[in-house]
Length: 242
Image (cartoon, rainbow, N blue to C red; front, side, top):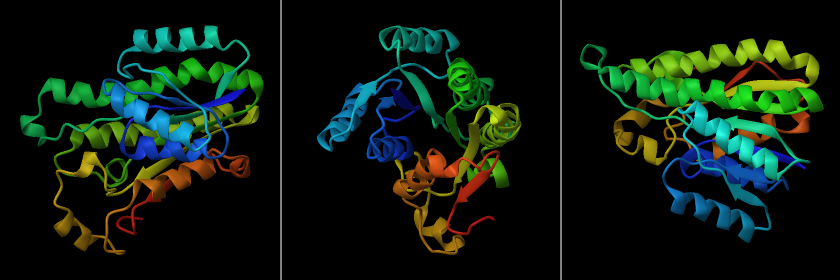
């Protein structure tokens, strides 16, 4: 059986992606770090709608935790593999660069960028063996445009784009596609501290996006219909920066 793994799936965009993929009949692995109750709520919602889901906790910044969690899952699912991977986990820890602490830089890059490397490398072999796979990396407007106060976040998300384009070329011959989705300002708890009233004046469509709108793009890129799309960055930003 083919599974989808969504990192950081207990809330926000990751939650909506997990819910959306589950509606297509694909079993979903819900990754989370600390909030088990929120992750369980996502699982319950998927199952209430007739889908299948499992919880798979690990810290995307910890390569040993990733290895242990995925090894245990594979041992308990010897006939299954993860054919859809959505690298969504990420954190913000904003500060202007002159005052940014080493810990702020390292925390953001370890979770967002290094986590993508560790998880993808671990799952890629099975995709290549089966000659089938969809990898969708969640980047950001911040990684394309750059945003002040987010040198760490912009760096990590820009690197995700570079990794997406490079890996897409490495694995295309084995029918594995690699794409990125770059949300702009999306109404989630990650943007709750932003001044939405002021920021939406900059957005041509005049509002923040919905996480469901990002999930819809991810769903398409993870589908069979997107087999000829790879190495691309799809922006979901209401026309703010194109």
